[in-house]
Structures are given as C-alpha cells and as structure tokens.
Length: 402
Image (cartoon, rainbow, N blue to C red; front, side):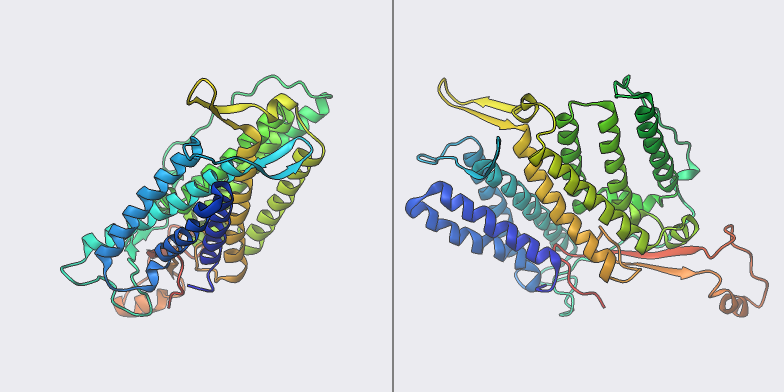
C-alpha cells in the first residue's frame, strides 16, 4: 500500500484537513484532531488486515457517521468559539478555512463510505469466521468479476442522437464565433464517435465506480464555476465545454476494448498528451481567475447557498471558494490518472482498479483450428478482435496485482 498514489493522496488530505480544523478549534480542542487523524488513517489501512472483517465494518460505519456530524458542526458553525479565517488571500480572492475543512471532510466521508460499502460486500460473500480472499498477497481484496463479455456489444448498436441548443453569441467578431463553434463541434464529433464504441458492460462498471463519479462531479463543478466567472459568454463557455468533453473522454477510456482503441488510433501516448494539454489549459484558467480578475466582482462573490441559523448569524457558501476547492481536488485526482497512464502497463485500467484480460482472435486461431480440425470462421471485425475475459475491480486502495 505504501507505494500507491491513493495512499499518499489520502494521507495528505487527512493531515491537511485536520490540521486546519485544529487551528479552527484552537486551544486544547485542537489537540484532539491528532486522534482523529490516526482514526481515519487506520480506516484507510484496513486493507493491510485480513482478520476481524465485521469489526472493521462496524468501526468504519461509526467513523463515517461521526465525521458526518463533524462536517455538519463545522458547516453550520455550531462549535462555540470557532472563528473562521482565510488560509490564502490574494487581491480580493480568499480561501476560507471553514470551507476548506468542509470540502476536505466531504472527500474523506465519501471515501470512508465507499470502504464501508465494499467491506459490506466482503461480509455478505463470506461465511462464518471465514474470508473470501485469504491470499496474503491480496489481503482483504474482493475481486468483482464481470465475466466474459463481447467486445462487439458497443453503444453504436443502439440509436444515438444529440441536440445542442446554443444561445446567440455576442463575441467581438463573427470569425471568433465561427472558430469557437467549429472547434467545439469537431471535438464533440470525435468524442461522440468514441462514445458510440464504448462496450456496454465496461461502461456500466465505469459509471458506477466511485472514482469516476466523484472525479466527474469535481470536474463538472470546476467547469460550471469557470463558466460563471466568464458570465456565460458563449465563446468562452464553448472553450470550457470543450475542456469538459476532453476530460471525460480521458476518464471513459476504460470503456473502450483494446480492439476498439487500435481501430480508433488511440494510444497511451495520445491519452497522456491530452491530459497534459488539459493540465496546461487548467493552469491558464487559474491564471485568468487569480491574476487577471476575469469576470465581474459579482460573479466571484455570488452566494451559492445561504442558511440563516439566527437573526445575526448566516452561513454563506460563495462561488470562488467552491471553484478553488474543487480545482485542487480535481488536479490531485487527475495526477493519479496521469501516473497510471504513464507508468502502468497497457492492460491496466486508468480509473477502475483492475486489469482487462483479453484474447487476440488471430493469435489463437491456429490453436482453435487444430482443436476443431476444421476451418476457422472469420471475425466480424477485419482486424484482431478482443474478448474481454474479466474485469477485476480492486480494493479501497490499490495494491499490486500478480
């Protein structure tokens, strides 16, 4: 577990969030967060244990409930003597400590709830005082098998259509409108063609995975805040939507079988280059938001959610802090995808924890022909078709698979 990116990302998030929470509480109450850090870190280290599965499930459920109460207490300022302060201040931008803590607690609670859900599956699949994966090389890992699926069962088999309703553009010149619209249209066509070739079983497994849903929500929040900063100008909004499409195209690469990737000309190098280009674009967006004051002051100070606890106290969540928190979380998780794309094998999935085992039809045609002592029927695809044999979904934190 120690060499995995997920472990260190979770550790950094836990330590930073509870350190700021200790500063918010102050005094002797701030020393209690040390025990909280150890408790949450122990919950994340559950994969290193192969015993007491039911006990770990109970502890994880209690920890998730207690941290949910902590999130509510910090969000609604229910703790006596807790004073909010800005962690970072630049010009008229600031990152409040309370919003940083609440955003980090949401990430921690969501991850702990995911661990409890997966541990529940282990308990249900196990018998009395036994575990379903006693192998020490894969401690407490519940391997979910999707079984043998057909790589030809793509979304393209069903009718698909999309309707885009765009508001009238008010850019400086008609040429700028045409260029932005043409770029967005070309990216939409390319990503749409790839989406039509997604394998349905892989797409369903991807859409129901924790990492995809959580990262998609964070990325969508960043792009919506960016559109709000630009006052929903059609030219800039088209650029933001293009970035959103490319990001989700990268996240959905796991739904493309190897044969489809070869036919579409998608390689790991192209995926890495796309993610690096998106990283450069995100840095440009951060520069525009922080240093050039793009948009109006009303957009930065726009209140997303307001709760009046009393006549003299109200909790307000503004647009800019939501953007910065979601931006930092998205960048941290996308670095994980970049590391997996650059250093792991071609058969290892990017978002899902596992690998796809596939069979090359042409490579094994002679073996099958010799067994049947007859002719080999050609594949419906002219190239080498792949059959997905299994999709292994790993544990809460990645461990090396052999």
